[in-house]
Image (cartoon, rainbow, N blue to C red; front, side, top):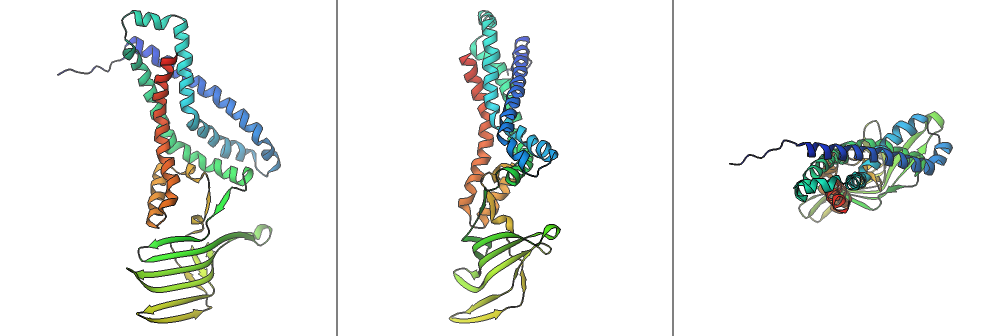
Length: 313
């Protein structure tokens, strides 16, 4: 039985070293250029908005560096391959390698090995590292730069339990109080909770509004009606006494941003997909699924562009 020899030869080490060193150089230079363009684009917000130097450097630019690296890493890979391979070709090194009897597939071996290392690095970036740094970056952008990108779900249906369905006509939040006593009031309007068994409705709770209680993590109803059904008989209970109800919903289920999926690690994306599917929101999971598959596809693009760059150079 033949034994595969993975020992690197001098040619392999030489090409891998050139590949990785040129890649790191391109990564550094292109990142600095991206920082310069981004700073010129957002400098007005840095000056006018009440953000600190720590917010700009730590919260925003650390996340920006990792985010732009994750997005453009395949381009850096192709630039590096074309750059150093063209230099080898202009020095007649590629010609000497081929004249020594090295075939083109054999020449590709160190390129693919180095491209595989970059792809593994890109995978770890996309799935785990970049989303963690994106949390602070996106928080900064939503707070100080793009303050009008918040979206709110209205006329939303949720399956919060196997036998419980919730309809919410609207959701809004506003600041109450003054100065140090300011707090956020979060409110659902047009609330309807249906409990059922199979195709039969057992009860319906209706309330004009429900206010989120941050201390108890519950929704408080101040005025509500409860309809209970026993066959064809209906019983209605009206109450104005405050009622705290533990609905499996929180304010975060109503407020979302267009790029919210970028701040979730892949395990968090899977949990969000399962959560939304269990609530009957399969259509809202599409952006999560696209983001999760994009992270893997982008990493393998490094290998494809390595082959293209070698052929072109």
